[in-house]
Length: 369
Ligand code: NAD
Image (tube, rainbow, N blue to C red; front, side, top):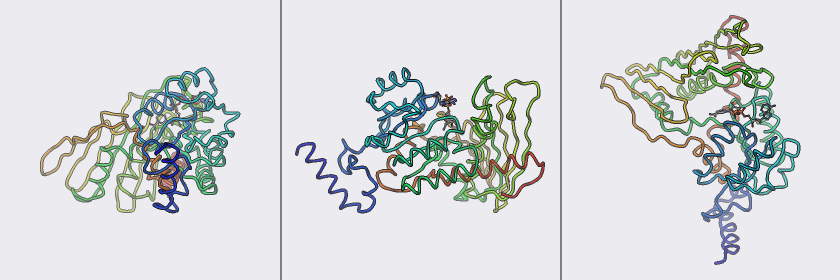
């Protein structure tokens, strides 16, 4: 069977086999044909994460593949296109971004820009008829998150937030332990995520970041409290510190502590900072065990230690490529029409909590979420 005939045959077959789900699939993505089962990604923002982690991981993807780049730096984009096999004709600037609508190879737009640009590029991508992955934090306020969800819904496109740890074995194991009650009920969680930031970063410019370390790093603690407990907090409190004599923190705080109370009685507390040495960890107390994870948010080398009445153990699980895994997970959703685990609603839920934490820090009061 010639390639064309085979493709046509399989496309038609897919329509019969999966019905409505197949209607959500671009015509060039046929089920059952390994050569065709790829979902085209456009990476928007070729910085440390977009180029350094996501593009670099694309060769390990089984379903996602890079088909377009969006950048303000043509030279950088040209070099990356050559390296990753992207057609130079599929390099876009921020100005001509909307013309992605005319490129049927692009199924997914992955927004990897500074936080305050997430909403604009997600909405423009959805209006161009593309599914969207967007980095965390989803945006810089609750209203923007809702607008992003609405734009994707209106255009019947899927939206996923880059919460890579939801697809990562150690974090998935911790979720299973907490939610199965295998060591009794979950009682408390403590988490820290921090690094010592270099000067002149957009991350400490509130216009681009939306806030201090909570938006970039503390969000991992908040997300973990929610995914480990499987609950939404009812009340929060927080304190921030903005040093007066440190030029890095002119319009954002440098660090924050926070507490969250969940309906079952789980109490979670955390700290996030741009002012001290790197650490990303959580500790979990259940009725019959103490579970420690450090590092728990890193790109690799994650660990999980359990101490219970039965003794102590270091959990051994595979260290995967988190970026290839999360992109493939979303690519599969695009193929099947399934809602992603890390939907826009997940990003919105974190944003609601973070905005309440800022409110609590400002007022000095316990705030209802
Ligand atoms: P970065 O500064 O390295 O890259 C940002 C990119 O945006 C650059 O290519 C830059 O040229 C471009 N850009 C366009 N307009 C800009 C503007 N006005 N100011 C600054 N840059 C502009 O940042 P990054 O570390 O790649 O972070 C990008 C996004 O990815 C952020 O939302 C961040 O939270 C997220 N991120 C996620 C993870 C994760 O593990 N999921 C890790 C790192 C970063």
